[in-house]
Image 1 (cartoon, rainbow, N blue to C red):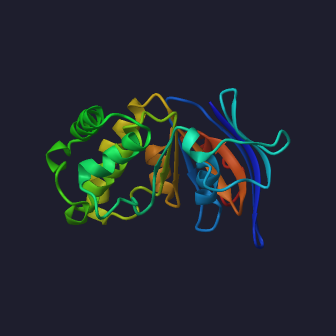
Image 2 (image 1 turned 90 degrees about the vertical axis):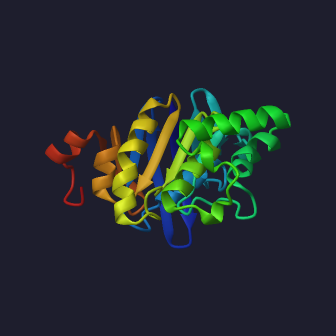
Length: 231
C-alpha cells in the first residue's frame, strides 16, 4: 500500500493531502485544473519534494521530512505515463521501451527480449522498429505504457493518459486500458479532470479540490453520499 500525507507550497497554492492507495486496484484522483493532481504524482515519483510530510510504500519511506529521508527517484521503482507520453522522438519504439532497462544495467539481449514481450502484450509488437513520431495517439499511448511497465514497477502513475487522444480514439482504447490496469498487481494511481473518466476507471476515487482531499470512496459512495456540493 502507498500511504502519503504531504504539504507542498507552490507560490500562493498549497497542496495538503492525505490518502492511501492499495495494491491491485485502480485509484483515481479527480479534480479541476490547478487542484494539485499532477503535483501529487510528481511528489510520489520523486520529481519534486514535499515541504512537509511522508510518502511510503508499505514500510519503505520514499520521503519523510521528520526523519530527513529522501529516496532518489531512480530508486523508487515507479512507472510514470505522462500526459503527453514524453516519448524520445529520436528513438524507435523498441529503443524507447528498452531505455529504462539499459539504464538499469540489463544486458542488451535480455533488454530486447523484455521490451518485445511487453510490446506484444500491449498489441504493438509489430511497431518495434518504427519511429515514434509516425505513430497514432493510441499507439503512442501503448508505447508509453510499455515503457512504464517493462521495469515491473511497484507503483504506476498515470497523468491524464487519455487527454492527448481525440474523442473517437479515447472511446476505443479506454475499455482496453481499464482491463489492463485491473490485471496489474502494483499500486496504480491515475489522475484526471474528467468525472466520467474517474467513474469509468476508478475502483476507488479521490476527489481533490483546491489542494485538499474532499472525499474518498467508491463510485456509488460518491454518487449516493456526496459530502459537499462540489462532489
